Image 1: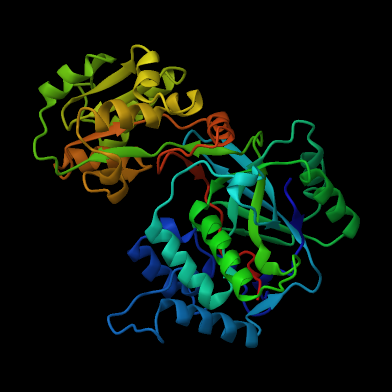
Image 2: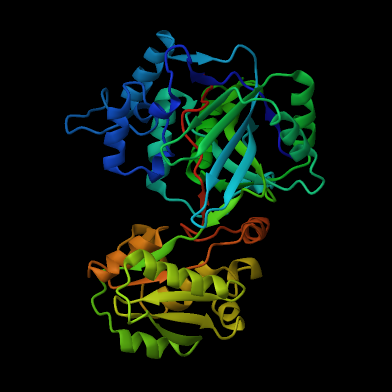
Length: 444
């Protein structure tokens, strides 16, 4: 099963970089253009220049964001801004964060290199579809830098808590790195170089399957790039580091494992008729029309809060909220789960029972005519994990309606992966995102 190894991680030099908050970022795929500019301005050595560089009008084959990333990387290593670990290490990574309800949570996991395996081997399993454009971008970056700047986030099952017990013991010591991110998340990192501890952790992972939670594009890119390097080096060694990719490994039962929903917001349909939509929905859904409190002028945060509370009360049912910009919203509850089984006979029960599968198949495709290609290209569909934002977009008239969902459950992710299937894009949003720049892997 999973084969993990320690590595000489590339980290910022504490003597040169006093505040890691100034040089680290969230993952590239959640950074807006304005945020990218802010990170550029925050510090000349911010990891944004490596992971998600700027594009310019005069970019060419020899001077572009990928070649510049490689140049920055080599320059920072040569100047001692980035240093390799003296000994191969595993890394214990903890994020402490606060939810909207005030609850404080801690999520811990192990950062290691993991041997890259084809999905068909059943060792590392995906759960979500990917987009080719993102894979091309990550491939181009890997081709110039030969590095992983951010970790793929994967889950494993540890019912005996063998790995968890080791993690909790290690976490009793003071962290080697600790700082507060811009999002008020406490970032803690322990460097594990004790050989016996590393061997114990490796031993327990030998029996584990890994389920990719976040970073599907990066994993598929690493797999494709590994295959390219193997073709170019027919006498390669299995120990060559390009056969591995950097991952953060978290127990599926970790109490700090939080999944947020990703909501769907609809735009630019040639015709959007609310009455017609309601008539169509009646076939498969119970419909409740719920007014917002008419005696109060509610803001978007309060409106989304009401909707989320309604959804949460029915979290064990197949239910969605629909907002059309008026002083009310609808709760749509599936009448009969057999309907989705009939609509998707080629899919497993695990896939059929996903909220996003039901929404996409019975509403977006069947009623609104938004097919899979349309969804992939986001022609009439936009995603947001922020319910306030979804409400705002519809309320201002920029979008025609919003479908708000409950979060996908972790066991649903596992079941779909074990069925060798992939969820629709944007089915999950793990929070918080892993911080980029804490530790990096340069494999050539």
